[in-house]
Image 1 (cartoon, rainbow, N blue to C red):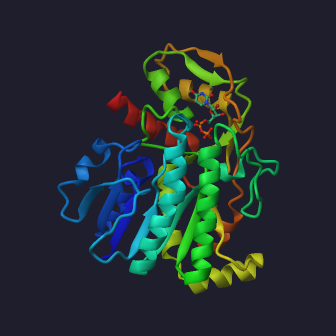
Image 2 (cartoon, rainbow, N blue to C red):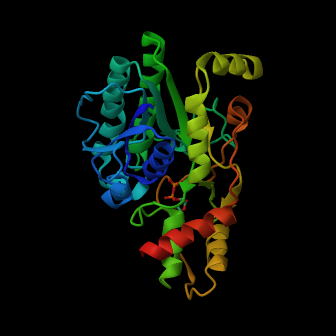
Length: 326
Ligand code: UDP
């Protein structure tokens, strides 16, 4: 039985991850301050003796008394709506947060999986985005608090890895959706589904021709578990042989199927045929990336991982979740 610390555990991805890890009979310590996470998400776990919740903001130092084997660092507001409301808090969660987590990982000699983001590519000039692409990011814009914080966090992980030989794995998560998304998050899939279920206008920002690639959360969890599991030497050898790559990369995790936002709106309306909603166009937020699609060759070759859930299937499951809660 492993003891696993999950920061951001009451959020969307954390909740889905915890459920899986508890099924495998691990002991879970969930740390969250519930800024975007929700206690309702983790309530079902509270009766499990292998689950413990600590209400804490990871930008403040903290100690865990029992020995931790693994850490998943998922804590950070990830939706533009929430991170733009509290930009300094967001920046601190990424930067001060990762410092605290790395210190903890070092102390416990724990393996760490750090969740980075496709946002570190900014408004990408290379398409699709490979791990080797450095990105095109505004340092002083609306998204900077999230993008730049996540970029620094990657660098901290990289330097700790080198200096202390810490076992750190990092992933860049592309747009992900599924049950336990925060309904107030303002993300495109949750917004469109809730609007369609409530017969409200479907708010397409801009002309809707911008693209995103949507990954169902179960696929992401599978990828995270695989990346955590692979032996470090096997990982290094595969990276060297197949990609002539010398460091531990920040693996892209996303679904490479790309859709325009307008097409997504039509798809959701098709899946909720009773909806009376109509599409309306609203101004495009500033610095909204035009295209986004992961190149997942590396994760495929190294982990044997690729997403399996098609958009339509994932949307159906997500619609059922929201039907119950809105
Ligand atoms: N979007 C939209 N209507 C909404 C919410 C979002 O058209 O009600 C657009 C948004 O402008 C962006 C895309 O959908 O181009 C994805 O937005 P989201 O906030 O889900 O994620 P991110 O921009 O971080 O990829």
